[in-house]
Image 1 (tube, helix red, strand yellow):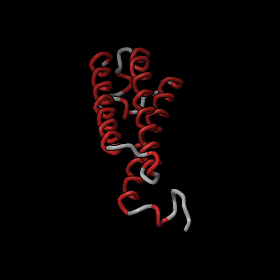
Image 2 (cartoon, rainbow, N blue to C red; image 1 turned 60 degrees about the vertical axis):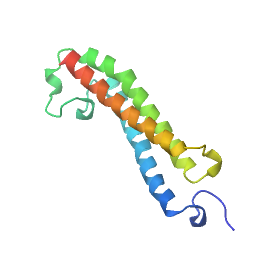
Image 3 (tube, rainbow, N blue to C red; image 1 turned 60 degrees about the horizontal axis):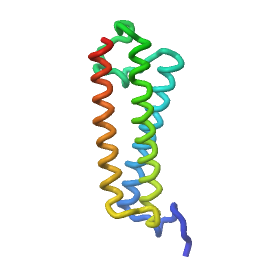
Image 4 (cartoon, rainbow, N blue to C red; image 1 turned 120 degrees about the horizontal axis):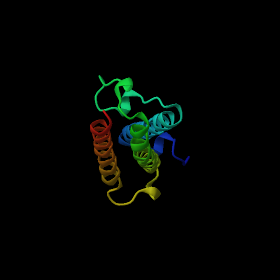
Length: 129
């Protein structure tokens, strides 16, 4: 009998769904990290990092202040999403990494990070636009 994470006999259908969902959260975290670094080093802020998609970057009153405000916070959100997504992806196929209620804890952490992200973006929009 083969053992390992990707062998079909070790992963049931629900774990396949968890693998996809958690992998998506990890990719979302990486995307936020890339956007944060891009804003920091190029001075361009993607619309994902703005409150309203109709906001125009050229109308920002203090661009450096906006980037300085969101950079560490978005980095934190991106890191938390990436770490929780990767951990949960690995744990979904490996019972040794699972602790009681780990899926509920990871989903709660991801929801809290998403709420924190929206709070950051809204506060930055009020301060700098």
